[in-house]
Image 1 (cartoon, rainbow, N blue to C red):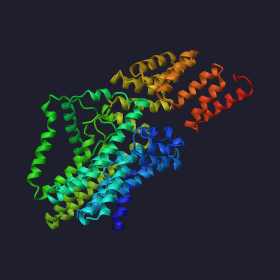
Image 2: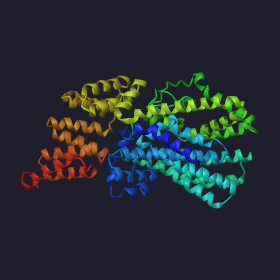
Image 3: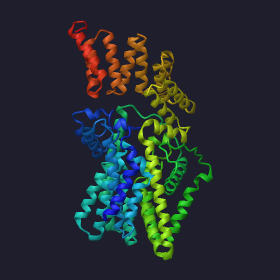
Image 4: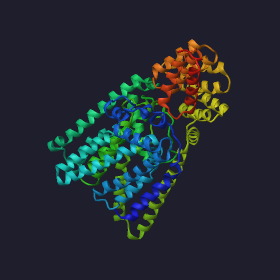
Length: 564
């Protein structure tokens, strides 16, 4: 790889993402890292590999890397962001290498386009999307190894591709469609799929199916033993035709988002799908007509278009909405799902640019180069600006609410930002906005309860916590909020019952453990209170307040003021 082009790709990537290198924790980051109880579990490494269901997903390689990062950087986010950026740059160079294996002279341009494309920003700027940047690396290496096997027929290349594919799957399960990609490649290369291709394909398929099954069972086990994700019932009751319509609209969105990536956002407005509307079915006839047209051109350039477009569709298929995924209840599409599929479209763009460079008159080539350069610069500027949105929760959710004011989740999250910063009137306003959009949103009722409690309105807070617990009886935060208010009111038995219910739903809930400790202390059960605070300290050893409470309780016990 020419050094100058490598430096250009690296410089472009670091320029785009430098605003976010010191960015704060966002969205799910706290679940995966600072508030992940497994980080402090001595058996963490064993559990993430050999105890599926110990965490939300079974991605042992990704979780091992996160554990190593936590040992290195703890709560300092710079290292996590830097890891994502470096992985993204390496992936860009591997995209270059992959396209080079097709003989594309402008393959390096594909690597640059991948690095600077705005659709990659969410994957790179969001710490918990390490699963995306990490899994793509072995995936691309597996693709390269597979191409080497096709060219040289060496068993070593085959087993290398198989091992790298398994590694990609152990980083993120969405790599499962890789076996279909190698069948598509076999057709592209030989105009057929023979028994030899199917025999080579079979071990990849078995690994894919086995790890998909393990991941599904692990997720079900975790959900059964922890607080469930509310709201999935809405998705589960959608008809087949509604899902078919949604899948077509999602495909059209992702395809257009690649070619016109403007006004991107973390949460897009929901679609009101009417399966009786023929217009909403329109994307599928267009896709089928396009596929048929390309099939008629398969003896020439259409063959390459089918390969690139097929790669895009195969890798995007898991995110089109045919299966129930939790994010679909708050947004129909998410940009980070484009991170891998868009490589197929990038390959087509690079191939098209090469063909155009061959056929346009020589005196117009400088104009064409200028136009291409301007497009790349505009893409980089768009990505740089969007990356700046991910610097902290307030910037992110203010931006999202401006673009999607009808998102109850965005309104709720902005309310949480104001709550955490002590701006309670603003927090209350955004929680009320969320509840205006969705009156049955238990999370917003709970957040409003917190804001009212901090504002001194205990009666209002109690009412909101009760509404939250009625709407979602398995919501531990609502039970813990009730315990807080009941504790303040001196209703210790009722407060204790709410704490115990919160801990039944989430055994490692630090705040509930502390509240139970306070209740037991007020009941004179100092040794039992100490046990609860010690359990909380194991989960959050850096919390000064827990340490202070423990010191006070131990002093009471030593002074003989607590029961023994």
